[in-house]
Length: 277
Length: 189
Image (cartoon, rainbow over all chains, first blue to last red; front, side):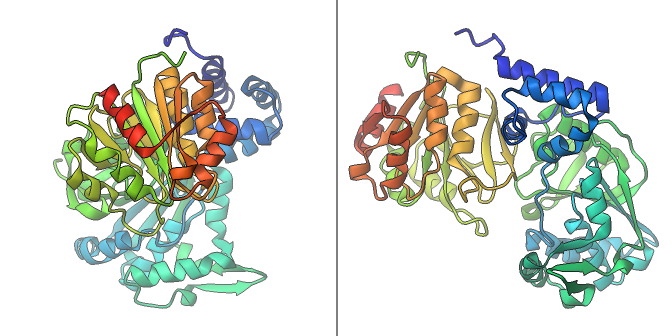
C-alpha cells in the first residue's frame, strides 16, 4: 500500500465537509481530522448509513438532517466553573485589572450551552462588575445557543456546578441564582440581561467589537493548526490593549503563529495577556 | 504488511500501569528512534504525575501532552487527565473533550484508532495490564491497518481483563511478558 494514496474514507470525509460548506455554509474543512473522523463514523453508524458518502447524499438533499449531523460535529461538553482554578484566577488576578475600566466587553467564544457564560456572569455579579459589562456569547450551533439562552440544566448536574463554584472562590451560594423544578434548574433571567447571544463562527466570521476578556476554552482543540492560527489572530485583533485571553487547561499558544503577541499572565491557568498594539 | 518499518509506538494500560511501564520505559536508550504515545487510565479530576515520575527515571524525554504537541523521536507522550489523546497527522498530537469511551477519558481505543488511521501499517500497538475492555477495539484497528499488535501475557499482568479482551479481538497478536516487550523495543532502537 502506498501511503500517499488517499484512503476511500478520507475522500468521503473531504467530500462531505465540502458539501456541508457549499450547501449550508458550515465550514468544518479545517477541523482536526482525528476527531472529525471519529464523529463522522459515529454519525454514520448511529444515523444508520453504510458509508459516509450515503450520509452525504442524504444531508445534501434533506435539510432536516442537518441539525442532527451538526449535533455530532460540534461537541457540547462543559460544566459550570469547569476547572475552578481558572475562575479563581479570573477573580483574583484578572478582575483587579478589569475594575480599572469604566465599561467592559467580555466574549465567551464557542459558548456551547452556556455553562461558562453563566459562570462568568455570576462571578462578575459577585465582584460588582456586572452593571458595567456586556457579555457576548457566540457559537455556530443554533441548538446550543438556544439552550444557552434558556439557561436550563439537568438537576443532577447542579451538585458538581455547586462544588466547582465553591472551589473557584465563589462569594455567594450558587442556589441564589437558580430555581429548581421538574428535575431541572432554571438560571435567573437577570443574569442574561446583559448578554448578547449570537451566531458567530471563528472559522469564517470577523472581529465585531473590542474586548477586555475573551474566554475560549476547549473550542480550538477541535481545529487544525492553521485554523487555530486564524482564531487566535481574530482574538488578537479583537482584544483591547492589555486585554486577556483564557483558553483550555491543555491548550497552549506555544504552537501558535501569534504566540509572541501574548504573554502568559497566569501560566498554570492558561490566561494570557495581549502585549503589543 | 506488518513488515513495514515502525514509525510510532502506542501503548495502553490501566490498573497496574505504573509497574508495567516502569519495566519498559526506563530501559529505552536516549536516542530511541520513535515517539511513544501512551494512554493510562487516570482520574479526571486530579493532576497526573506520570510525566514527572517517568521523566525522572527515563533517558528519553517524557511529557504530558498539550493540544497540537509536535511528535518527536525519543519522547514518551502521556495523555492528560480528562482528555482523549489522538494522533492528528505524522507530526502532531491532538486532544479532545469528546464523551468518555467505555467510561474512560483518555481512552486507549481512541488513541489506537487514530494511530491506525494515520500510521497504518507503520504503527505498533501495545496493550498492557488493565481491568476493563478499553483498547481491544483500537488494537483491532491497528491490526486491520497492517500494524504490529502486541499484548502483555495476561498470565503475567497485574489485571488480566484488558490484555484478554485484546486477545479475544486480535487472536493473532504477539503475546509477550514485560521483559519481552522491553527487549523488543530495545531491538527497534
